Length: 249
Ligand code: 6GU
Image 1: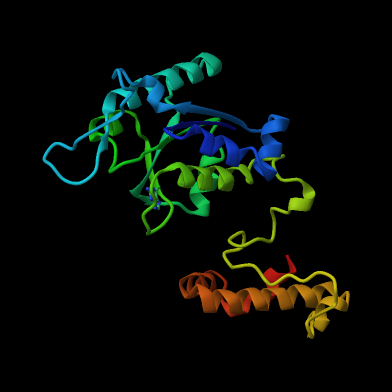
Image 2: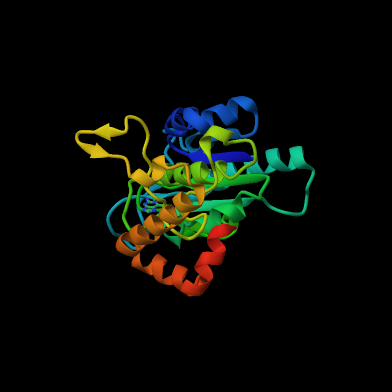
């Protein structure tokens, strides 16, 4: 997977992505990260990339030209490498106005060879350049951040762990929240007692069938409490009669 990030704050992306699991995958060459500063494409003598909004209003708007030129450069770089002339790489604009990010979207995007992320700042980006270059508009939730860098990193982190070789065995991609439409069951490690609280007995029995059943029960209970809408969907997809058979799988 080759990530390309268009941003005004390249250090923010580079520092965070070079740590932990994504950092290891970048070193291994399973991932590649190309971060470009939109400001380098400013034609203004003061390197400005924003201006006042037409029609008035608070805040500044990122201008079309630097964003467009930056994107053209990236697309050219990608096309030169892939020789795949016809198809434009997906370009994701991070914005609270976009579709809300979710695991299925991550699975879809993980199949791409290249992904371009466009991080906005200020009050937004001139609509005309968005119309020309953006294929997907994505938000990470119903709250407002100061810019698209954190959302781009949230997306890259989520997508990266789905790419073969990024997670090692010890990082475990299976049996996690959302992989079976339920939240995760609780985990315990040594010591067997902490501040008077014991590890549930069942986990010490070595009876794997019983442990699996207990974990499913815990996962369902947690999901019902914290995410009733996920629980409803799960129960519709897995009516109680089917649950026993599914557990064995
Ligand atoms: Cl993608 N951008 C900003 N600025 N705020 C957000 C967001 C994106 N997703 C949730 N809040």
